[in-house]
Image 1: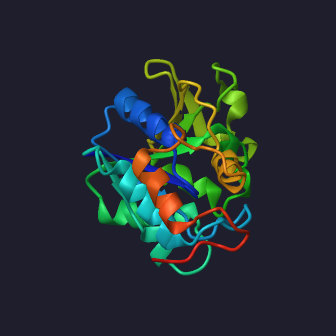
Image 2: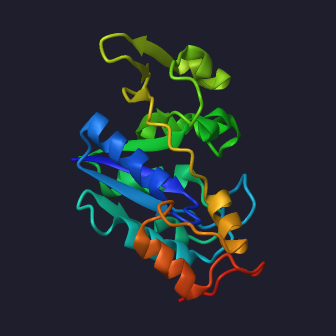
Image 3: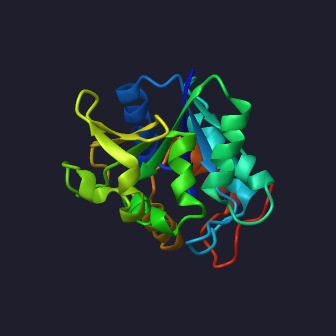
Length: 220
């Protein structure tokens, strides 16, 4: 089985996340994509809502797609959410499956700051996705400087092969310029978020009163 791992705060999950995941699934013929809401991101400020709300919204948003699933592995793990721990966990539990880690270009540029980042590439194939308005062409210059010697270009697959045998791919996505921060700002301003998030997520945000106050949302 080919499994894609898609991590993020998902605060809230929106159509940009879902469409990106669908395009990755189709491009790489993945059997399943697992959305993994983070607990505490090491390099970013805290989430606006508690974990239970973000997990609930992710499950509502993905329920209609049999190829999508949600994991609370990082929520259950205490402390900061380090990708190396998540990849080790999935690699250990799925030794016969091919694991693909999905990461946006902005986050990939900072990967040199991640915990044990050189070890990440041996645990999973990487799919680096474009950002809205970003360039559609990619090259070796985008690889982390400290890890470039570990990769070689595989022309037949149009990918970079890691010395461990895994591959790193770059994928140009349809530009969908939706951001979670803008959605939260619209809610605070009393503006509509219809067609920015799935209807089930919109109703959940309204019912729970999320993002309307400065305090974090209450857990279910």
